[in-house]
Amino acid sequence: MPKAEKILRGPSLEALTRSAVALYGPEARIVRAERVLEPGLAGLLGRRHIEATVLVPEPGPEAPVVPHSLAGRAGIAALLDDADRAEEALHSSEVSTQGERFDVLLERLRGEFDPPSEPRVPRMLDGVGDFVLVVGFGGAPLEVVNWMSRGEAEPCARATAGDLMGDWPHLEVPLDAISARADAVERDVPLLVAFTLGPLDSLDASLAAAAALRADQVWLVVDARHKPEETAEWVEAASSCFRAAGLTVNALAVVGAAETRSPQTVNALGIPVGWVDGSPAPRTVL
Image 1 (cartoon, rainbow, N blue to C red):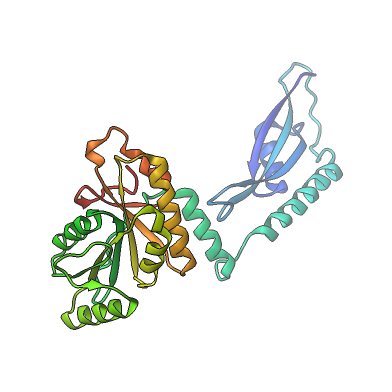
Image 2: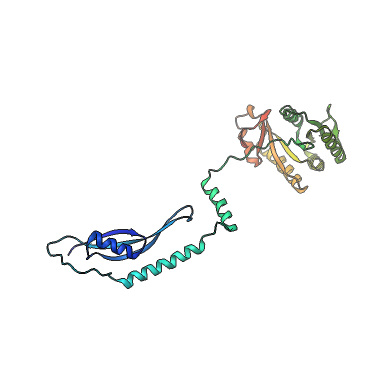
């Protein structure tokens, strides 16, 4: 007699047996069954049920009527035992909402389901007595400090260091930086220092003097119009020098970006952009 397979789902094998008889008659036979987990959030809060394959005789003129019994009951029980063992393994990998592992799982889920956020653009430290050091060549550091100080609602203490002299107080040695910071605290403002590096043949000495000032935040001024390999060379030297002193180069202030067709070459330096041509940068890259 031709037979057809039907799929039933229910909470238990007994309930599925009753459903099979009610739907398809006493000759319906459950020939396969397995426990199924409908996944919830990363396996949490999922619903479980039994999914059974029922062999159903197709209607025919000679279809006999036979009292129903569970066909292959031992085989079905074995299948469900296997499913129970698999389910126990699944349980052992789950975590309690009361445990520390659950917090770790939630943090991982946030990373999986939340869209990646744009890296935060560096901003100048502006707390009372915060020491911000802006390092570069020629008059560019002084220009950037002027940009930054004009962008602050509150006034800033300003000074110069390195090879460039100006109208602002000049820091010669680390003790001068300590005094300038103390003055900024007295005035209830941050301290911005423009440090101009010397010639390339004395670059290491200039960078060591800059690192010795022990700033809270370090900006490097790079010119987007210069050859990328030349800029990369001195920026790498600066990063190494500050790193050796236990400090970090926090951000780039880019000048000349509007005057070149390839300002994006500064992105290869691997330091986030914070200022571009006189204004806070909208993104960390050009």
